[in-house]
Image 1 (tube, one colour):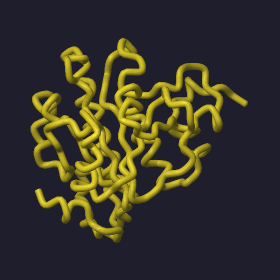
Image 2: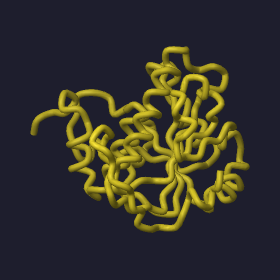
Image 3: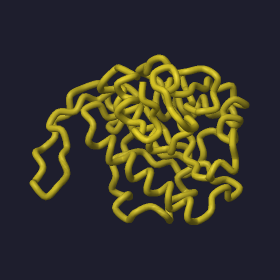
Length: 219
């Protein structure tokens, strides 16, 4: 895959009109200088088969959301070999970068990210982080852990990235809306919020629209 072609400079990408049988894709998409990576966290077989299938569906949703937003990010699935056999057949044709090995096993991640994506800034998103994300910056790699575990391994991904001295932030949920339950979200929900904020540039609007109404407290 031609990485330079895939991760091109900020531009307007013209899309062909879709037939009526296909889902809507914006005719104009604005390419951001933002890269978003889902690191599959299944080393040591952390996930059961049904959880891997669930994560596969979440990755499919993420791909679809990114394909249909007017502000798509450069999408990356790393440690992909851990979930490849559970992915749909057509995923091999997806126009994203799939990296078989983990990017974040050790401190060499810095050289890898600079070489692959041309970025030095890496941010990990986790509900366990103490600090809330205020804005999304270009020329930055944003990472979330791809893990479905029913909270059996609480703090697992957060500990991996803090041990690598990677800045960790949580979505500013409690600062903007009142919710009944935990702020822990599925992998695809985190991405959907991230992608929507690129459009609205308003956390309150995005979170109000994207967090399920059943979880929100009325003012």
